[in-house]
Image (cartoon, rainbow, N blue to C red; front, side, top):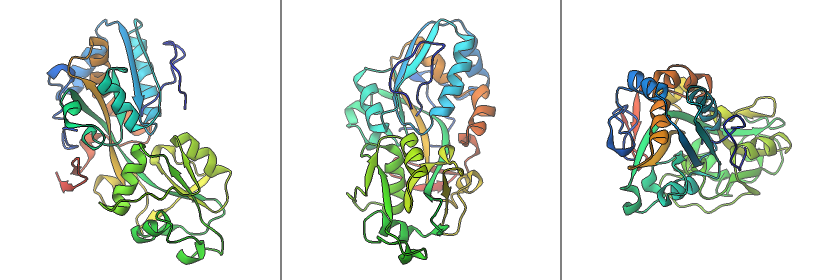
Length: 312
């Protein structure tokens, strides 16, 4: 996960609410309707544009944005795209303040910003991603209930033998406050209940969790599906349901989030063109699934800013 800006060819940036997942009834920055993403998004990317696109926010969908940005910059050599992955909260704060042109987030802006800040932003829902618990390779537990996860991540369950595993202390690797991944995980596990348990460590980014999980025995954490790595740790079931995109699409696997890219209503042309490209067939028709995400059009349910889920 890189935290500095790069030139066009060095780009390895991040990627990581007002519209719902059902959408693709999305509104482009500046108020232009980009619902017809397949044709209009590709055309926008093909036009000759120039400028600098900057972003901060969620680290969860970095790979997707990297892949899309490379294609976009190949078609638009006068555009530079660069940014950081400092968490959804920081990304939303930065785009609201105008220090970046895009704020990437796993959560709706309403959950992190004041109403007067949100009203000046436009939401682009670019994908959906599942998120689930992961455990160290030496842990024998392969399925946990939401109630068991609640006990572990509140500090009430402290030994693996309490949930059917071996006699060993559970090492809880959490994400720092401000992480959209943490907010999504806690919303699914705890609902509206407040939780301030930090665990044994609070990590900055998804990549940090990957690294730490790969070198720590008896540990548990959580990651988005695109960061699962079975060579380092095991992704486990929740309530008997496997962490797979097909189970996210119908909400049988309960832990998932929409990947948002916010911009200002008066965003520059380069930023608008890149965001339209993210909604085009070039990205939605191939890259989204290749990178382990779900196209928003494939979701069978919707989730609003409060976390309430309903059928399409």
